[in-house]
Image 1 (cartoon, helix red, strand yellow):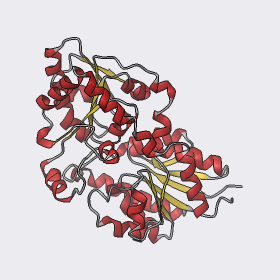
Image 2 (tube, helix red, strand yellow; image 1 turned 45 degrees about the horizontal axis):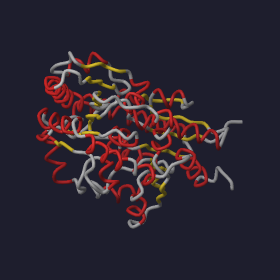
Image 3 (spheres, helix red, strand yellow; image 1 turned 120 degrees about the vertical axis):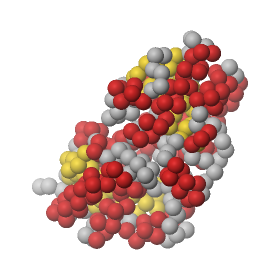
Image 4 (tube, one colour; image 1 turned 180 degrees about the vertical axis):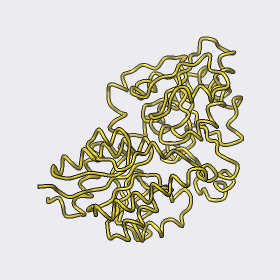
Length: 375
C-alpha cells in the first residue's frame, strides 16, 4: 500500500544536498512515504522521483534573470500541472525564494500545505515578503538562530531546526586534515553569471600573488554542474591554477590556508571548516543599485551576521578588485597570529548553530504537523 506523497523543491546545489538529506530522514521516519519534486543528482540518489531537474535553472540577480524567463515560466507551468494532478500531502520549498514564492502561491490555491525549509532572508532585504509568506506558507523551518523570533513576531509558525551543515562539516575526517601553508582555494560560485563576474577577478588575484611568491599554489574547487572548460574560459590567467572536482570539496577546502569565495553558502561551509575566507560579490549594475536600497543588514556573509562582527573581509562590487583581494590574502599568509585569531572566531560558529540531527528534526516537524507521525 502506497503512503502519503510529499513534493520537495530545490533549485540550487546546496538545496539539492539539503533536500537529499531531508528525503532520507522522511523515509526513515515514515517508510511508506512517496517523494517527488524538483532537484538534482543528490535528491535523485536519495530516492526522490524528479519531475524537473534543477540544472535547467541557474540564474541570479535582477537583470540576469530576463533571458531565462521563458524557461522559468515553462517550469512553473509544469510544476502547477503536476501539483494539480498528484495532489501531494505537502510541498517543501528549500531556499531560493525568487523561484519558490510563486510555487507557494500555487500550492496554497490547491489547498496543499507549504513548508519552507531554509528561510528566505527577508530579515536582510525585501521585508515586505513576510506578508506573502504569512499568507501562503504554513510553517517556516529555520536554520539560523535569530530567524524564528523574527517570524513569530509577525504572526507566523516557525521552528529553529539547527543548521544542516554543522553535522556534515564538523566531522573528524575533515577537521583532522592539516592545511597547507601556501595553498589558496578559489570558489567562484555555483551560478554561471556570478562565475563570469568573479573568476576574472580571482584569476588576476592569483596572478598578483604568484608574482610575489611563486610557491603559492592555487586550487579552483568546482561547484557541482560547473565544468572546467567554462571556468577556464572565465579566467584571465589560468597557468598557475589546479582545477579540482567537487566530490571531495570539503577535504579540498580544509587543505587550504585561506579561501577566496563568492558570497553565499560556501562561505559558511568554509567557516565551519575553520578556513579563513575572503568574501567577494559582484552583480550587474542594476542588481547592485536595487540591493543598495533594499538590503537591511550590515554584512553579506552569514558568518559575519551570526558572529555579529566582521570576521571575514567582504569586498563588494567595485571593491572586489584583484589588488584588494591580493593585499588581504598576502597579509593573512604572512601574519599567522591574525590567521589564528580568525580561526578562533570561526570555531565559535558550530556552537551557535546547534548540532545533531537537523534533517531528522525537520522531517519530524513536517510529519507531525501533517498528523503522519505519532508520539
